Image (cartoon, rainbow, N blue to C red; front, side, top):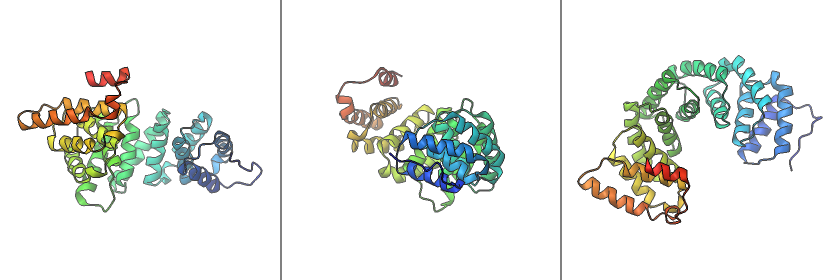
Length: 292
């Protein structure tokens, strides 16, 4: 069990870096997290943007909720958001969303500052993805922010910003828009092309999220769906129950005809041989997903 020296004169950067390191290493230790939380609340007035963002991110990575700490961090962050860089803005939003902590003043302030950063072209694709994912989990959609994210994401993909864009980022981005039934046609077009180029790097979750997002938005992109289904057939053992249910629903609901219909039936037959399907032990939620 890890411990912290409560008597050490901890500096804010030292404490936040320690929390960040343990979270990065996936070291979950409740006594340690409680100690970090206590020290963080004591030092919170001295925290700069990086420390505020790192502490929040670390607790989110460990799925460890300490409400008094999160309230203190949110209040301090709102006062200092102007000094946050784009990664710190996005990571703070991601952290509170990942912990399912609704804090309207914080998200309102983040949205305001994010608009300015996006308009300047400063936000990386990963930050755009994390920001949209976080706001997709809020009670009410922030359509102006989603429009700004879409325009920036399209620009970064088209211009070839030199970033390494992953399947996780692409699938999370379109899922964010689909979760609010928010269709942005230029975004879907460029993400489709980018996904096709990188489909071999997609994991099971990314494939399922991509298929579900296009189907939920009513965008009938057979080349992409066929590529997703084909890639999924090579990874049948990797899918969870919910992931396979989403993929089967998305494939079956596509309005195919002619040759597409034959390919669709072939994909469905192959997907049905996945271990998670053959087990026959599906929950009611997954069965409802298929029924819908």
